[in-house]
Length: 218
Image (cartoon, rainbow, N blue to C red):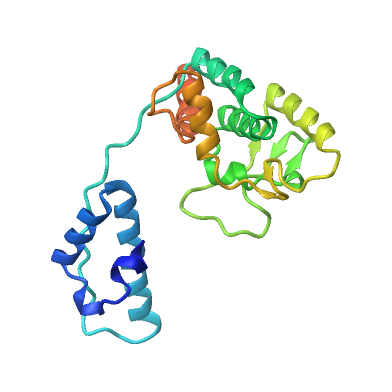
């Protein structure tokens, strides 16, 4: 998206006026803010590591969106899982695994789809959410201790996969990185509102733990 609009322009043309024009062109404030962040990072990287610019352009971004606070009740979660029965078998397998892991651990979308079987210790009940040797980022992914229900699901899935798969959630032999379409299909079948997204699972886990008086740091 950045290349299509900015590709033929010079750095000097990265102006507030052109940034606003790009925002209007994209008409997706949340995504546009992220894309302009990439543009800012690219110009800063070039300035520091390639050729110094006379001055760094000031990049105007759309305002931050309000933080999402939507979380799912246990009843809504049950409706979602029941609705997955109407998906095709492959979709159903992927989205059920994704949902159960997200609901049980509050793990982010990308970390769930990147889970490999060698990151799961069924005996120690520990799930690594970042492959060994991968550097940590600001979006921390510490190991998590698995509860009995999730452990039961994982042991069953492990028997089903029988060593034939590297990733817990695969599509065509590769990790199923994008669960949006299947998630939306199940959500719509469950008659849940559009503000239920994959990230809602993280909010739901945190909310239910807080309602159980678990320490917020934990």
